[in-house]
Image (tube, rainbow, N blue to C red; front, side, top):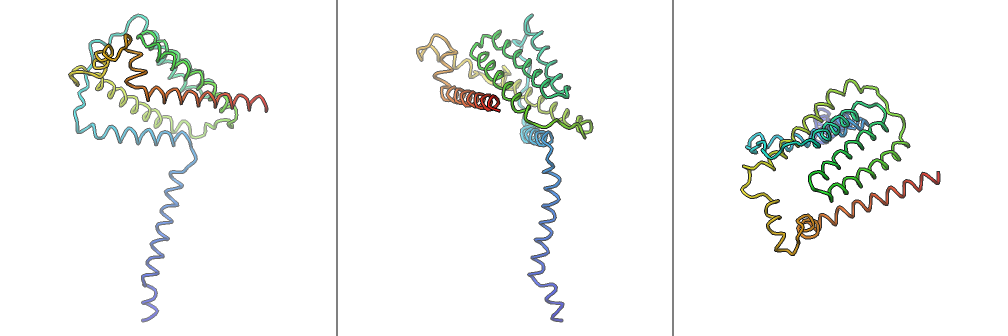
Length: 239
């Protein structure tokens, strides 16, 4: 009788519970920490889509197409170029070709900013795209050749995740710019407040007054990225 009691004691139950937890954690770690970077990114993006999209199912976000969104003669070719470049970046197997395709997309967006009277955004976009291309090229040259094993089986999953995230962002942008969503948008408020702040240019008022801390943050990020590019380029020359 004593031996039976010791076999089912609290200490044995505690040890069995810990062993079960460790076994479950080991199986979960092997399933999640698989070492496949594209799947890590897909998991993060899919989680973002679920966290943001699910609450919207119970709320009317008021998506409507604004009549002011009319593509002109110059915008249509740039939009087509950006779309084709994104598709090419996803289709290319070589990393450097994908980086070049993404750079074309960034340049198309830069021209769109310039056409819509956003020279500050165009300059920022051009600077970011230039540093991004340099950083990616320097980093990819040090990485081992990419393996295509299991790539075909995961292509549909990646396409579904990318399509879901793009659709979600599009719906959020349409909801934010919907004319029936808000009586007065932030842009109208800033345009009306610019003369009272002593600015004749609303862009300057936004950059140095309304969102001065955000502008300072962007400058800091660009400076840090520039330092990183210089450091990587200098290390490459020494090697």
